Length: 252
Image 1 (cartoon, helix red, strand yellow):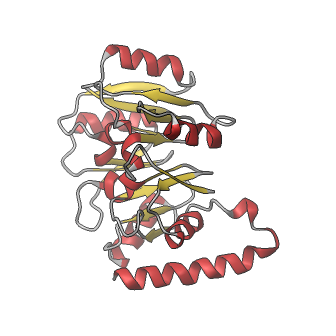
Image 2 (cartoon, rainbow, N blue to C red):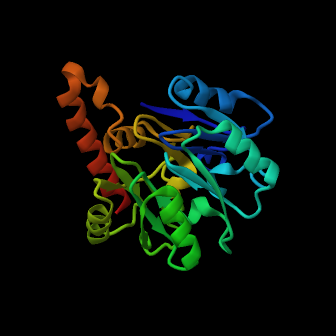
């Protein structure tokens, strides 16, 4: 199920939230509306936690994690690390990273098995990502963009990449990640997928501007509606396929 929401006036919800299969972080905001959207959808399954990193609200772009752990930049204070360790499940490792490129959410994209990283990332950071998150690490670009965390989003079920990614690159990335991929957008044509949405294996949240076609593509590729298909499952999937192909035709 994909849900639309907004952080105050911004549709870039991937900037202010981080979501995995084990926990959800949301940036502190003046209103509780943003937090409550995540809490109502997720709190039965995983903890939803208020957090800041270096005193800032953009937890989605400064952290990266999966069900095994979470990495935070060296700007995170000891108090913030203590809060995360106390709030997150015991099985989740919280690790601070000494990395020059400190917006970890922009330079790393990962699921529970594989991580794509910025080509210029430090060797030590690559080792930390591999050890803490328990993933295979690949230095990659997406559609010529080094910020793989901004321009791709994938889970253990499927993934989405920058709309200008070539078919050859999509096939190469798909075989690397071992999940199906599709080129797409969020927030009415935005190619910054990491900033526009957060997603895990059973739920997704996208900015308020996201169109119904984009929502359909998101639910289809991340396999979010499979539990609800019932009698109309076949008809729904064929409609989604048509919508997705028309969306890609428009963008190419």
